[in-house]
Image 1 (tube, one colour):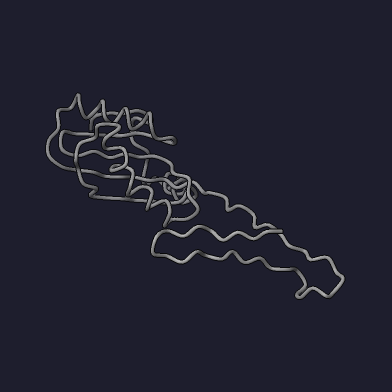
Image 2 (image 1 turned 30 degrees about the horizontal axis):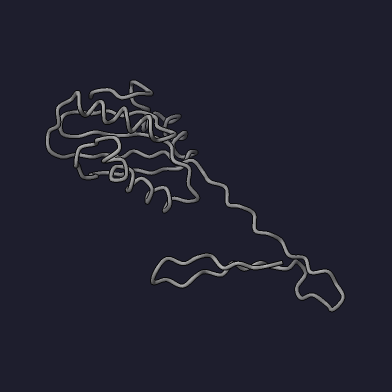
Length: 153
């Protein structure tokens, strides 16, 4: 079995992946029980990303948000006005840190391809799926009135 070290980013050291052997040390002559690590399962996170900036013509903004919806899987809905918007979607990620990092990059990464306005992120909420459903069941954090698609406020 060949062990590979993960490639490191420039300026960082590569990480080692450790495996454990059930039952402790191997005695000479015994078969070494080496297990491949199980892939980490992504969890679904409900994301609400709020952005704002200079007023943008509504038809252009709607077209840009529709393009974002087409490009990004798990897109749920977007609401918009001339100077702000809110995008709601599901993100699959290992943990909250990863989901938040992906969400914080979303607007900038799609700015050119979707022709989004040069707005800044002014708010971010990320909750796991059970928390989202619990909130909805308790009457808090209701889904927007128009689920799916891109709609004005």
